[in-house]
Image 1: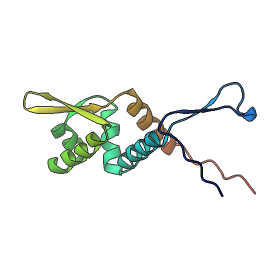
Image 2: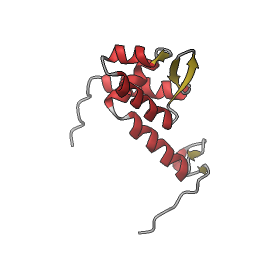
Image 3: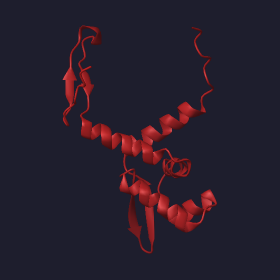
Image 4: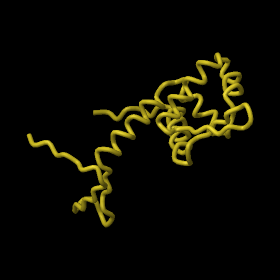
Length: 126
Protein backbone atom coordinates (compact mmCIF):
# COMPACT_ATOMS: atom_id res chain seq x y z
CA UNK A 1 0.00 0.00 0.00
CA UNK A 2 1.46 3.33 -1.02
CA UNK A 3 1.02 6.26 1.38
CA UNK A 4 0.45 9.65 -0.21
CA UNK A 5 2.18 12.60 1.42
CA UNK A 6 0.59 16.00 1.12
CA UNK A 7 2.71 19.13 0.77
CA UNK A 8 2.34 22.07 3.12
CA UNK A 9 0.60 24.16 0.49
CA UNK A 10 -2.96 23.81 -0.79
CA UNK A 11 -3.53 21.02 -3.28
CA UNK A 12 -6.20 21.36 -5.97
CA UNK A 13 -7.48 18.06 -7.29
CA UNK A 14 -9.86 17.64 -10.20
CA UNK A 15 -11.64 14.31 -10.56
CA UNK A 16 -14.55 13.45 -12.83
CA UNK A 17 -16.79 12.74 -9.82
CA UNK A 18 -15.97 16.06 -8.17
CA UNK A 19 -18.08 18.11 -10.58
CA UNK A 20 -17.06 21.48 -11.96
CA UNK A 21 -15.36 22.85 -8.82
CA UNK A 22 -11.89 21.55 -7.90
CA UNK A 23 -11.45 19.79 -4.58
CA UNK A 24 -9.32 22.02 -2.33
CA UNK A 25 -7.20 20.17 0.21
CA UNK A 26 -4.99 21.96 2.72
CA UNK A 27 -1.45 20.80 3.30
CA UNK A 28 0.01 18.89 6.22
CA UNK A 29 0.98 21.96 8.23
CA UNK A 30 -2.54 23.39 8.11
CA UNK A 31 -4.03 19.99 9.03
CA UNK A 32 -1.72 19.71 12.04
CA UNK A 33 -2.61 23.23 13.15
CA UNK A 34 -6.34 22.56 12.75
CA UNK A 35 -6.05 19.33 14.75
CA UNK A 36 -4.22 21.17 17.55
CA UNK A 37 -6.92 23.85 17.63
CA UNK A 38 -9.68 21.25 17.80
CA UNK A 39 -7.89 19.33 20.57
CA UNK A 40 -7.59 22.55 22.55
CA UNK A 41 -11.24 23.46 22.08
CA UNK A 42 -12.36 19.89 22.90
CA UNK A 43 -12.08 20.34 26.68
CA UNK A 44 -15.59 21.06 28.05
CA UNK A 45 -14.43 23.91 30.32
CA UNK A 46 -12.46 25.60 27.52
CA UNK A 47 -15.38 25.06 25.15
CA UNK A 48 -17.67 26.76 27.66
CA UNK A 49 -15.29 29.74 27.74
CA UNK A 50 -15.36 29.89 23.94
CA UNK A 51 -19.16 29.76 24.03
CA UNK A 52 -19.30 32.66 26.49
CA UNK A 53 -16.86 34.67 24.39
CA UNK A 54 -18.97 34.05 21.27
CA UNK A 55 -21.45 36.46 22.87
CA UNK A 56 -18.86 39.20 23.22
CA UNK A 57 -15.64 40.19 24.98
CA UNK A 58 -15.32 39.67 28.73
CA UNK A 59 -12.67 40.07 31.40
CA UNK A 60 -11.19 37.10 33.26
CA UNK A 61 -12.99 37.84 36.53
CA UNK A 62 -16.35 38.10 34.77
CA UNK A 63 -15.74 34.78 33.01
CA UNK A 64 -14.71 33.12 36.28
CA UNK A 65 -17.86 34.43 37.99
CA UNK A 66 -20.12 33.26 35.15
CA UNK A 67 -18.56 29.81 35.28
CA UNK A 68 -18.44 29.70 39.08
CA UNK A 69 -14.78 28.71 38.74
CA UNK A 70 -11.66 29.97 40.52
CA UNK A 71 -9.92 32.87 38.79
CA UNK A 72 -6.59 30.99 38.42
CA UNK A 73 -8.29 28.04 36.67
CA UNK A 74 -10.13 30.36 34.29
CA UNK A 75 -6.96 32.29 33.60
CA UNK A 76 -5.05 29.07 32.85
CA UNK A 77 -7.73 27.88 30.43
CA UNK A 78 -7.64 31.23 28.65
CA UNK A 79 -3.85 30.97 28.41
CA UNK A 80 -4.20 27.60 26.66
CA UNK A 81 -6.82 28.98 24.27
CA UNK A 82 -4.62 31.97 23.60
CA UNK A 83 -1.61 29.75 22.84
CA UNK A 84 -3.60 28.17 19.99
CA UNK A 85 -4.76 31.61 18.85
CA UNK A 86 -8.43 30.83 19.50
CA UNK A 87 -8.79 33.90 21.73
CA UNK A 88 -6.86 37.09 22.24
CA UNK A 89 -6.63 39.49 25.12
CA UNK A 90 -6.40 43.26 25.21
CA UNK A 91 -5.42 45.22 28.29
CA UNK A 92 -7.98 47.72 29.57
CA UNK A 93 -6.44 49.38 32.59
CA UNK A 94 -5.95 46.67 35.21
CA UNK A 95 -8.07 44.15 33.32
CA UNK A 96 -7.45 41.97 30.31
CA UNK A 97 -10.48 41.69 28.08
CA UNK A 98 -10.68 38.44 26.14
CA UNK A 99 -12.48 37.86 22.87
CA UNK A 100 -12.56 35.21 20.18
CA UNK A 101 -9.66 35.52 17.78
CA UNK A 102 -11.85 36.00 14.70
CA UNK A 103 -15.14 35.18 13.02
CA UNK A 104 -13.89 31.72 11.99
CA UNK A 105 -13.57 30.70 15.64
CA UNK A 106 -17.04 32.03 16.41
CA UNK A 107 -18.57 30.21 13.43
CA UNK A 108 -16.81 26.97 14.39
CA UNK A 109 -17.88 27.08 18.04
CA UNK A 110 -21.48 28.03 17.31
CA UNK A 111 -21.76 25.37 14.58
CA UNK A 112 -20.33 22.54 16.68
CA UNK A 113 -22.51 23.46 19.67
CA UNK A 114 -25.63 23.67 17.49
CA UNK A 115 -24.80 20.30 15.95
CA UNK A 116 -24.19 18.73 19.35
CA UNK A 117 -27.49 20.11 20.64
CA UNK A 118 -29.54 18.57 17.79
CA UNK A 119 -31.52 15.46 18.54
CA UNK A 120 -29.77 12.33 17.30
CA UNK A 121 -30.99 11.03 13.98
CA UNK A 122 -31.86 7.35 13.88
CA UNK A 123 -29.10 5.16 12.50
CA UNK A 124 -29.69 3.86 8.99
CA UNK A 125 -30.60 0.18 8.90
CA UNK A 126 -28.03 -2.09 7.32
